[in-house]
Structures are given as structure tokens and as C-alpha cells.
Length: 493
Image 1 (cartoon, rainbow, N blue to C red):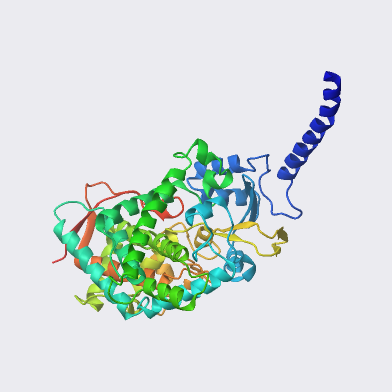
Image 2: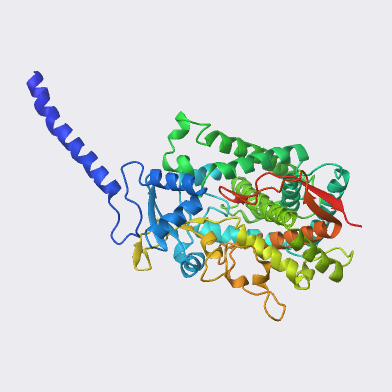
């Protein structure tokens, strides 16, 4: 009997070995004409090399940029776990990714589904007809309730006054600007989305979670995206617990607000009322409470930290550079006096505007944008990018490209001012992306950054709180953020 079993088992084992060998061979073989990059290995791809370079150079963006230089390419091919990824460098290439329809997809990865409460819905990570219809609806109806218009500027000015009041109440001690700035942005976003403010205690907790999320994950999704099963073995270390906790907190906030809207207990017009009306009247199957929740989630996450982080870097920079701060104040004082700033003043405060543009270049908030998913095979720089490949966009490299910028590693606001005293070179800036997936909240971000920064410098001199200048070196995770610091805000006479 045993010999018969052996005879039967031998071909099965042989077939299994052939299947495994074939799988291993396929997993390490790059597609024909795939962009250059490190060798791929079974299960890991080239994750270990990317992690090594990430640690060595301080961020995934800088690590991948160095790899691209070593392979002398502006189209870098890597594989993280089982996912082939192309990282695109150079202004011509990144403009193609931003503008061409073939790059409009989003990956259908575990990490993205987890980010979207389990399903690829909403507008940030959806694609196809759902994305096109709901992005258009969201932008249109946010504008209808005042987003991007005079009403939005009025809300920004209210928040500026709240920030000034907060500083005035705490002026006897150093202030960390991070929380108050992020809270102000979130409150404006939520005002137009849901007609109310988020309670301060809950908002602080939510902002802490979002900050932790940014530091914990790379644009490619980290361990969770490469090996989703790791969440069962290492739920804390992989970040799975953090994202579940964040999702629950945001879900609770959104569900409570939806319930209030159903009872008509929130007055005025807002995006949520517009969506619920569309859902009830048109009977369109894509307009569901689940979709509304995830669009609200997209709005909160997209705008929560990016805008406030720009302002934080601006405050840090004037704290570190008294000459620049004095130059900005003199311009504000000469042109505005004590008049409350408006977005229209951005054309008059040329040096101040140039300074804020240089902040967004030098401290690129999203240096590695994306991810995108290719909807068709595409040729780029002579290489073949296969359909469904994930594409990341190295915006940070364009902002430091020596062929575009003189002395790109130096902070020089004047680079944005021409000989006639007008703003220039903005066509080489991509803080909000371009094309059909351009950030829909750019109007709020630009206005908020300008009005709040001008209002702060107009009212206070920003100075070091302990005699030691804080570092300008950013922390780069999903987005760039300033290292924690405090400042003294001294009232101007």
C-alpha cells in the first residue's frame, strides 16, 4: 500500500513544485520594456531596497528620487510586495500623468479600500463614472452654498479673528500653532459641508489621529497594502488599528450630522442637504448614505492638514528669519495698514505672495502625489507602463529641479518676482495638482493661507520662544509637516 501512495503522490508533488517555481519566476520577471529599477524578489518585490533608501534619505520620496538617479531614469519601475509601481519624475512626465485620461484611475488596493471605510467610493479614490459624476456634483453644490465665494472669505475672516483671540488670550506663554490652524481649516470645511462646527474635544482627537496616520504611512500604503494579512499578526505595528480607530471616529461624526440633517435640525444650506435631496428626489442608485459618508471623509482628510501645514511652515520660516519677516510686515503695513486682509490683496502684496509660493515650493506638502492607476498601456520615455500599473508622481523633484529653479535648495522668495514687480514662474508649481483630479479645495487653501498669514504678521511679531531656533527640516510621511515647535506672538505697537 505505501508504494502505491508514493506513486500517486509523486506527480502531485511534482506539479505543485512546478506551479510554485512558475509563480516565483513570474513574480521576479519584469514585463517587457518595463522601466528600470531594482531587481524583484519573491513575495517582497524590491520592498527591502525601498525601505533601506527611505530610512537612509529620510522619506520615501527622497529614497525613490535617489534610486531614480542611480538608474539614470525619470521613470522608475519598482515592485512593493505584489504590486508593480512606476514613479514618474520630470516636469513633462508629471504633467502627462496629471493631464492625460489614461492616468485617471485609482488602484483597487486593500489600503485604499480601508481608507474609504471598506469600499472604493467617494471622490478621492473612486474612478470611472462614479468619480466623474460625484466629483462634478460635489464641486457644483459646494459652490452653490458659498464655497469659493464671498461667503467662504467671510468664514475665513471669522476664523482669523478666532485665531487672533486665541493668541491674545495665551500671549503670556509660547504657542504651538499646529492645532489652532488645523482646527480653523476643518471648521470652515465642515461649515460648508455640514452646516456646523465640530466639537473642539472631538476635533482635537481627530486631528491627532490624522497626524499619526500621515507619519505612519507612505503613499504606497506601507505594509498593509503589500501584505494585508499582516493586520491579523501585527494590528498595532502595521497601522491597521490606527486607521480603524480613525475611520470609526470620522464615521461617528458624519453619521450624527446626517441624522441631524434628516431631522432638519441644522439651519441654512450646505452640501449635505444638497446630497440628501438628490438622493431622495432623483432616486439615483449611486446617491447613498454610504457614498455621502465617504465624500465627507474625503473632504475632511484632504483639507485637514495640507493647508494648515503650509501656514505652519510659513510661521516657522519668519520665526527663523527676522529680515524676511520685517520685509513682509513693512509691505503689509505700507499697503494695508490695519485693514483686514482679503484674497484680492494678494495681487498688491507681491513680496508676501512670493514668500508664500516659495514656502509651497521649498516645503512641498505632498512631494509624492497619487497614486494613479493606468487605464490603458502607455509609453513613457521609451518604456512600457502596463495597464493597471500604479503610478506615483514625484512633484517634489520638480519643485527642486535645477533646470527650472536657480539654487533650488535655497529659500529665495524673490525667484517668484519679475523685473516689473509681478509674480512669475507659477506654471512650474504643483501644490494642488492640475487636470481633472486637481484638488477641489484649492480656492479655500489659497485664500485661507494668504488671509490668515497676513492677518497674523499684521498683528504680531513672531519670535523664538526659548532662545533656540527650531529646525526647518520637515517630517515627511504621507504629507510634509513641520517638527513640533512653539513661538511667541508679540503684539505690534
